[in-house]
Picture (spheres, rainbow, N blue to C red):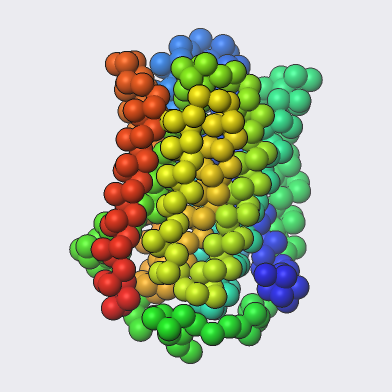
Length: 409
């Protein structure tokens, strides 16, 4: 891990910067401003929720189109444009005088932040690093997101208390255009190719490495007609989708268990630390033993998290949930991208990854609504979490069905 960082520091740091920048478009950051936005625009909880769901779905659909740009243009150029557009969108939030402008501004923030910034980071890592070290490169580049999750919401709350919510977004816009964009351009200026021998190791027996990548690059259309996609992607997306819904309803879920919701918030740093650890571990193992060997076990932390929260009556269930869930989210993200690049090639990687990412965003937008309806109809928290644990076990079985097909590729 350190060898890759020492030999290619600018490559890795550029990826980290992009995932850090993505934090400004993530749920955990925008949610900080929910009360102020609702008050400023006289929106009910339901109205703001509906608006947010709509712009999230719209941004996911747009990502399917914009995500293909990394297949045809320099990721450095697309990365710089993404940061610039995110800064402009943040500035538009400041100027929004009505709900229509606000909706467009938040749509652009979501598209460029949650959508394009991590997409460009992952695409850059797959292009800059060879297959036998790509898992570690992806896991290191992903660290910007948990770092942002652990620091930016607290910073936003502090600035908002001093200067108001609009000036907080103005601070975001200035930070992006005056600090993040110049830093990204400096890191990527005349960037040489990453060294192909960094940390080179023996490939797993069932996944022989070739001097070039996979024999051919699949198009998105070919992949959509292959059953392997539908065996792999649901399980690889499920930890993030489930945890988005659980985090969204954290107050209702903890109160239903008789626990103080503040304990859930206090555990955020634990989730961030577990996310980092899970990501680094998975990236290393994916390079050393091959990503396919990780499929049978990658969902075990998610099942442990759900069972702990659902079964325990002691608040220690919150800590166990956040620790295991953070680890699960950290594990699936680099594994998904390593698998996509290793199995289906890099020629159309941008199109393929933007499709899977957009699918996750769309399903993630529906998750809070589904859990909300189930809670409103009297479904117990334990039954809800047991059902999600059962779904995770089902997805793990799909992985086992997928393994022979994936190895034949």
